[in-house]
Length: 299
Image (cartoon, rainbow, N blue to C red; front, side):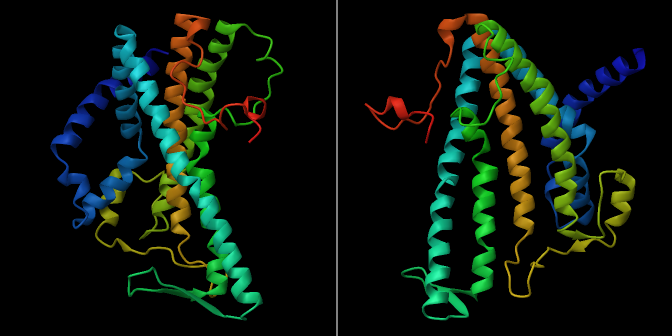
């Protein structure tokens, strides 16, 4: 137990040092013309060191919020506003998906086209791909909606939950459950998913392949032979060939879940401290308009 506490304290202290060092030496991880810097970026993006940098930032913001409650409410509003903004924008991908599907069915079934060209008005550049490419590309727009609207759905209260234990609890009991769920369910799941999704992405962007078990010195040795090898293989010969973007969306998904976990923890804590009168304070939820209250939550 003592060794674990020493390890924790040491890494928390090193987290502040690593953060300052990274800010003051951006060339060591942002200058990708040097392959060693690229591999450093890959290594630290899914490392214990990066976790404690983020954890230290969380501690600083939390302590500041405990001292000045308005600051914590401000963090909640910013994080929930960010989730709402990203989600409302990404939701338009659903319309794009419908229009693209309509285009594919109409042009393929009626005009029997093997290729479809889209040329934006006023631009001389067109996108010409096979019908199979456009059809498989529908998966991408579906992934955009799922990955980028996840925290938006959480803020709006449209996520699925089972309230067998939660529903009968009083206000402060619910807030305690919410705080526990945010810290011990949402955060650990997001952190583990990030670590594996991070290296899963880079395994399809560069060669030789990297993994979560690689040490930094091994990564730096690989830098001598590393080269870009962006995944462009589709499920079919003429299908959608940008599947690496799904892996980027996976990281975006995890980042949004992690930020929402922090926002949800802060909101639950503040509502616990301030009482039932603060429930849903500053909460920005969509509405169907005046007179449509009976249908709220069903859309």
